[in-house]
Length: 66
Image 1 (cartoon, one colour):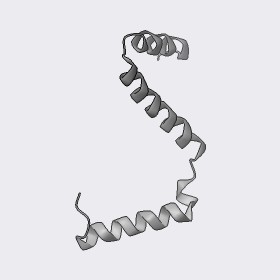
Image 2: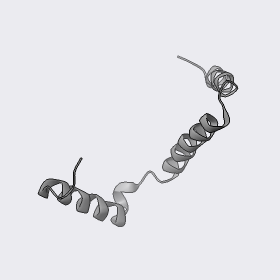
Image 3: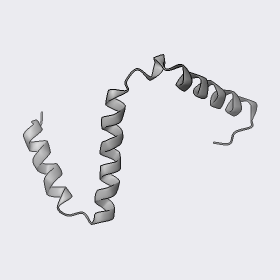
Image 4: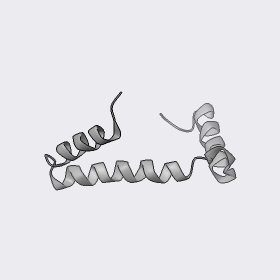
């Protein structure tokens, strides 16, 4: 099993090899993970469930294309 320190070292090594656009993309992913971590009760969010239900109904009725 990898330690957090070795993972951090690997991440830092690879970050040094990326250009600015690639780093911005990585930052977007990391921000998404961090924000999602704080919002881990999506199944209790009524607006989220309503939107999910709406999208599911559109898909099942054939209105939405996947």
